[in-house]
Length: 236
Image (cartoon, rainbow, N blue to C red):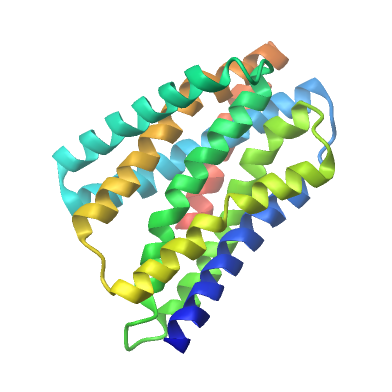
């Protein structure tokens, strides 16, 4: 039982430190429309890579095409439901984008935590290696969530707080993964495609339109391409 709690602590540190660092880095970004439009595009490109080359392919391998489609549809429906309910409370579109993106990142951090917790049960040193990899790739995800907050002139401490909290599901997932062992592949597949569906909808409906609204030029389009390429470099 002691090992399970150590693994859980690993999960919380990996998730919360990674996304929190991303939020911290965003504080040093210049606050001009062109730069912020570019960074929103960068966010969209990076998250698009995560969906197309990480979440959905892994979901397909674990659960097959039917689970992938089901997860995407459920993820989109969740975001539409949340969007309809927060529109009355959150009038600013950029604040809404950040909150929705935060939800999608938190959702996809949960199956990552499951994988992390399970990896510590293997005979190899996969657990520590995977922990470091997850921590590093959580940093740009935290930055992606923080940029719309930055555009909206949200206070620094709130940006760091919100981005750090999105890492909580990693620790919860790590506990469950370590406690149960190798969790059902179908369940993990559904979680991954669910997260993919939420991100895909937010990218198309919120992030890219907001980037174009901030600056009418090519900055956001160039950002999307560079963000996608950054994803390739980080993951391959």
